[in-house]
Each structure stands twice: as structure tokens, then as C-alpha cells.
Length: 216
Image (cartoon, rainbow, N blue to C red; front, side, top):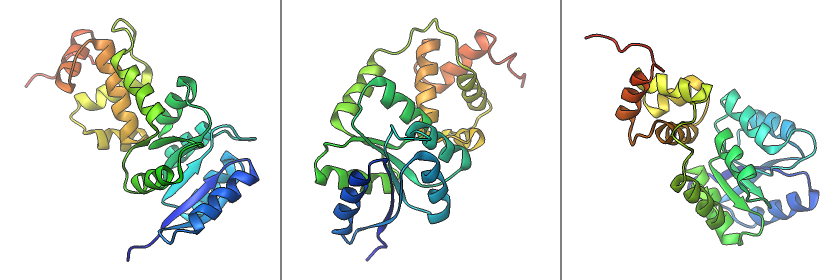
């Protein structure tokens, strides 16, 4: 039998923390190693306790969830963050995914859905509630205008791609997740009006974003 999935629960409502802890305690597949009432505490406990998955609320007193996710990513904490919140608007979903969350679930999700999401997150797989998945798909179908300039981070990603780095290598160099690199690439493709990495690099050189291409 494999070791149980170690969980850290971050939520500023004690009742929510107690409810989640009790739910997971009933299943031997999981063990709750700690609880945090705000983001900074979640970051400290994640470094100290080494959880596999962090269930992270977004709106908390003190450091909010998105800031905590970004800090965990910056520090290279290997735990996968699964957002568990009541909010599913673009202004909440997209920043959390950009910051490095591997999944996004709503608090009204059925118990079985939550358990499946935690298992998926522990395996490094994306876990999204149906409404959030639909929202992200809608965003991908209506990308940003191709005339928009690349952000500084998008330029950094494009330069690393042009230098031959994989998504994983680019993520390691920029201290972000592979999922975030992929999100940046999607935005780059939309803004440069291209469909793949090679075309993005070519267009980057064409627009003078990457300097002059090296001669063989």
C-alpha cells in the first residue's frame, strides 16, 4: 500500500478547516499534516511539513491565497496547490493559475469530486471544476488581440524558447511552474498571431523582439 497523500489545509474559517480535516481523516488514503489560517502561515508550514497537496482558499486575512501561491512557487516548494474557494470569476481563477496553482475547485464540489481532485493534484495532474474548466476554455477560444505587446515575463519565456529550452527548463529558470509557462506561451501565440513554438520564435525575430538570429 502506498503512503497516504499528505495534505495542508489553508483557510481562514476554523469551521471549514475542521470540516475538511474530518472528511479526509475518514479516508486512509489521506493524512492532514497541518492547518493554516492565512497565506504566510501556509507558506511556513509547507516548507516545514512537506505536504504533497495544499488546499488553498483565496480570500484570507493577512496574506491572500494568490500571493501565497506565488510565494510557494518562488521558493520552489514542491507541494501542488489546489485552490478551494467560493469564487469562480476570471479575476480570481486566472491569477491563481498564473501564480502556479495546479487545480481550482469550488467549495460546493461533491466529496467524491474533491477527493478525485486531490488525487489528481498529487500526481501532478490539472484538476479543475467544470465551471472553471469551461471559463478557461472560453478564454482560450477568445485570446488576447494579436496587436498587444508582450509582457516582460512573456518576453523572458520567448527568449528561453528561442534558446532551445523546454517548458520544464524555462519553468526552472524563471521559478514558475510548467503550467504557467504553457499559459504564457498561449498568450504569446495569440499576440504574435502564430500557432506553435517555431513560428513564435520566427515572428519574434521578425518583430525585433529577440534581436538578430544567430548565423550558422
